[in-house]
Length: 283
Image 1 (spheres, rainbow, N blue to C red):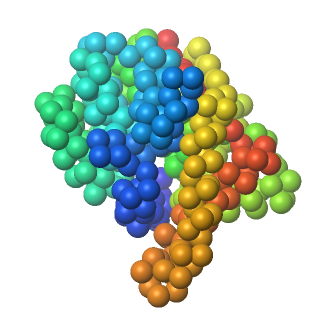
Image 2: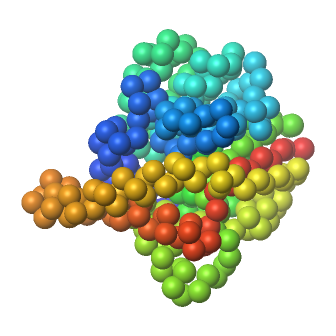
């Protein structure tokens, strides 16, 4: 990723940390992702944890795994994995304050001996070849400027037979109509995301890098209540957000995040993108 784009991602997460703290996190849950609702889970907190469970089951997490959480945020998934499995987890993020928050979260949850966090770019890490048995990317691959660079690095880092699990946003077509592209980027620009790829673009990139056993599942119906929740909160607080920006309490990045959160669901309702769960294996 180029330096200016990295700076924009860091600026986004720095500016929105209080939004996540007050509107999304629970006391013991620092998940910077959407929730997975099913017949057993009906609460926001439960749904956030449930996406971790679904990803772990889909990727076959097992005791002894050495896991890279690529784009770990504040450590929500990494800590959850260490709490529920006998695994070693390394989390990486571009955002310095997220490293500090993640380390504190791991200490509080008594898993700091099996979880570590670093400030690194997941497209160009400092780890040795074949360091991990599983790479976990929950709503983080979207930020890659060129998605193929993520896959190249993931392939290098995985041991033979290693797995890659990705939960993320996938555009339904390229190109969309001009109106569709504008609406999609109203969302993405507000969240400091250059673009999102189609499933076929992801498949092509993964196969070019040597991966096999590419499997994708559309799980939008399970995440829709969580997506709707964000849209509802952002819409209800829109006028307040405008006022706070006017008096200088919220900045352009905060405002863009709120605007993008409204436009994301509008784009979903127009069938411009979907939420997918992607699992891949290295031969």
